[in-house]
Structures are given as structure tokens and as C-alpha cells.
Length: 305
Image 1 (cartoon, rainbow, N blue to C red):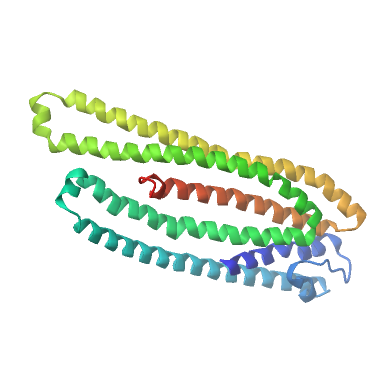
Image 2: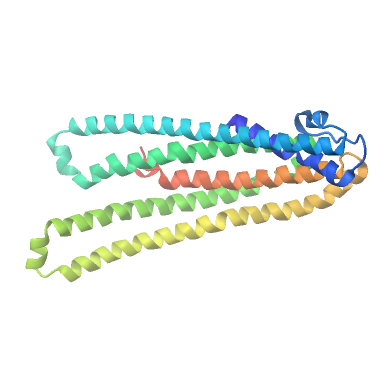
């Protein structure tokens, strides 16, 4: 994941020599960029384009290999963890007393053994993987932004408290809705199992309508919670991104001052905006990944354990 973040930064750094070749077109002109890539770009225009093209292909290919390895290795970690978890949990359940099984319904225990373990598997294999990957890339891109202009990068970080407050509020609301949806699903299973397992009694008392209404009420409660969760999940990333875009627009004016003062040129400013904007997207992705963990993980809704 770390190698992937560095390679993605190197791909973004090639914007500078591409800009030089496409717009500046001055013999011997080499704008400083990350990793000293300008030093291996030839002065001849055709040769420069060849080297830039080769670097793009090589960096992209290597980044693809790194992402494949990170995905596969995290999947191995997740599968191993869930296998051990299920083995331990099943052995623990088998060792319980008869009174324990009288207090807890079978479908509840099976749900913990199957559904909850599967949620942890998803969290380990995909959610944590995405969180780590986005975090490494975010660090690499912010470092690149500091390289091009530490003044504007520090100024950009002033929106961090705003993003943090919004993320905390969105996360709290989603966790509450996830708890409500999970408990509703458990109640829905209990309701259906109770009615279907005692179908003879239901028919004897002609309680089909009452049982159907009870099932529908629980199902509607789950739907309402999921729709509210979808509403928040849909509104959170665009809201954060819009705040970032407004700030980028303000940066355009400060960038003009930096260019006029000679502290950076146009190619560096455009590359700086690229890294900063993608870093904002990574922040939004990090927020979504963290929210997904909060929604999928059963750990925060099982008696606080």
C-alpha cells in the first residue's frame, strides 16, 4: 500500500514535465518536481515525450502490481482471522450450559456465528484495506503538496476542523441508524421464525392477519432506518467535496500571487492543485470507508463488547 501511494504520487508528478513540453516549449527548461524526475527527462522534445510515456507506463504497471498484492494479502489476513474467530466462537458455544441455550434463541446464536463473523470478514478484507490504502496515498499527496507550496498547504489545512466536525456528526448518525437496522433485522427474524414454526397455532386462532401486520411493521421500521442511512451516506461526500472545491477556488487567487512573486511557476501550481484536490477526494473516501466499518461491524452493537 505504501509503494502504491508513492507510485501514484510519482504519476502525478509527471504533470510538471508534461506541462513543460506542451506549453513552455523552451529548450533546456526543466521545472523541479517530485523525486527529481526532471533530471531524467531529455531536453529534446521527441525524446522527452518518449521518456515521459515510458515512465507513465512503468509507474502505472508497478502501481497495479502493488495494489493487487495489497488486495490479495489483506484477503488472506481476513480469511485467516475469520476462520479462527468462527472456530473459537463455535467451540465456545458448544461448551455452554443448557440454561444458556434456554436464554438465547438458536437463530440469534447462528446469526452471531455466520452474519457477524461475515461482517468482520468484510471489514478486515475490504474496509480496513481501503482505509489503509487511502491513508497512505493521502499522506503521500499531502507531502507532495507541501513540496510545491508549504504556505498554501498549511492554509488549506484550516478546513480540517470543519471536515472533522462534519465527519463526526455524519458518523454518529450512521452508527445510530446501523444499530436500529441491525436490531430490527434480528427482531424480523424472530418474528418470522416464531410464526412459521408455530403455523398450526396461528391457523387455529386465525391470526394470519395479525402476524402479517406485525411482520410488516418491523420490516417498515428497517426500511425507514436504511433510507435515512442512505440519505446521510449520499449527502456526506458531496457536502465535504463542495467545501473543498470552494476552498480550491480561493486558492486560485493565492496561487496567482505565488506565481507573480516567483515562488512557483504555473506547472508547479497546477500540479499542486492536482495533489490537493485528490487529497480531498481521499479524505472523502476515508470518511466513507470509516462509515462503512461503523455500519458493517457488529462490535459496536453487541452489548458494548
